[in-house]
Length: 175
Image (cartoon, rainbow, N blue to C red; front, side, top):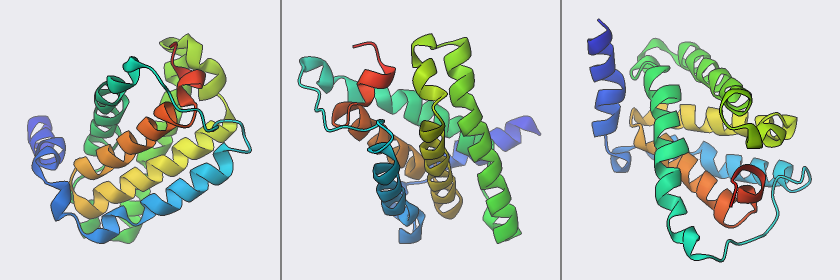
């Protein structure tokens, strides 16, 4: 039963191309970007501050694996049944919101138990609001596309831009 679930959900989701995803799978991403910018700059979570070191070339690869791929595999690929859209909109949104709550809760838990340097950021209510918006965006993209790559790309591009261009590394990484 568990192996069958793993094969059907994250297993098949890994094999489903993001290029076959319907355009509406990406629909929330521009809205998320506008929301994150509107909240992030006034809250002091974003500032234009490009990273200008050779280390910047390695960060996208690292950020692809963690947080993007690993978090999306867990919070979307495992927590949201891949074919939930067949159960209707209400069920799909219920699973999206459940996965988003877990995703948001993970950040303070991560800071308190593992990454103590991230405590000020991961306990910041405005950061958690943006994380919730990202969770909904990624969850919706996953439900519509049934590909884990849609939320991975959304998550990865968000984190890369934040860390490489908008000062995020100053808040969470020790560089």
